[in-house]
Image (cartoon, rainbow, N blue to C red; front, side, top):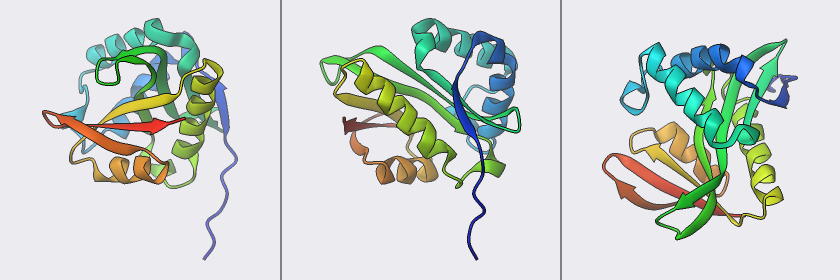
Length: 159
């Protein structure tokens, strides 16, 4: 049986999206709460921090006018482990009912395009050590595991 293609768009996020992003975040982390903020006030503070870090690096996936996923990246991130500024992917969340439809991949591709436009040569992210679905997803996009800190795995990709 062939998967039905989903017509979605990728757009720059704006601060007016923040409440909807918070809801997507909370729904997207169901079952993975050990790697996320669980209180709405903490999620809102985190999202505000992401917007302050690099508003140009936040993109949303929309389907029928609703946000179904987002990526928050930072094209100004100094990686102590890399010893240089890299493109950091701080957050990638797709609503569970929309996973495995190419949305996460499209969001990551958009961010990599953004990083390249800034002249960056490396993308970096941290993922929970038991978030196997995400680890395999990132590996499939060419990210490699580099090191660990507590229960986080650092992954990078040369651009």
